[in-house]
Image (cartoon, rainbow, N blue to C red; front, side):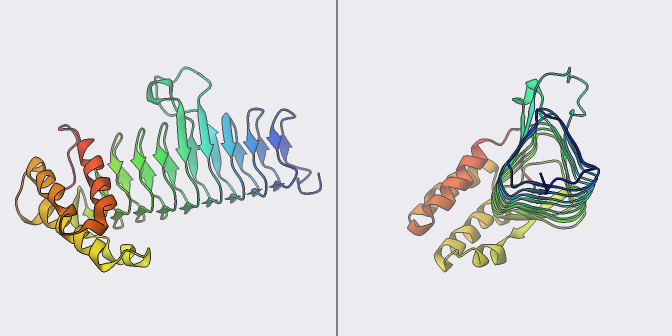
Length: 264
């Protein structure tokens, strides 16, 4: 294939679409599947049971599908699944899952992953996210759609980050970050809501007003989490347009555990 560099080492059992491009000195293992239009740069290693969808751009020196860094991992055929139209920049490392965590590490579609990002075993990342340089996820982390992680953000295992949330540079997350929240600090605290991001995504003034009301309930009025949830439940009355946004927040808050809590 003319678009496979002659120095690349590709196992005969690997399944690559005929339109895939592979750069020099890249190594691809036998259980790898790569969809149409994906471009893989030089000096990459793609191994394990790894699936890449269509039109991804994998830059040089990326490692995908290596065994998880979990001492319980015993060689089971777990997976790394990457969707479509993702950009993965230099020196990023994404590992397969573990049996204990469901067996799959997953990256969705249209994500912009900058240099040195890390997805540990069993992480689930949604769509349209941005991970700035050195954003690092420990095992079992869940990241919703449209999340932005600032450079050097570090996320503790089992933490969840809700859709449209954002972290500042060097944030350290030990607790869940609800949808829409902007977090900053070591450990991170909720500072505001991602209002500018919501405007750029087409949120109407009424929906943004509802998000402001949710922020007030969670962070301004000294309510317990249970009291804040009860307040948020009432917001569909004055803000019917934001019914889906309120439901998104409530679904997230119902998954908060006492051991983890939310950033405050």
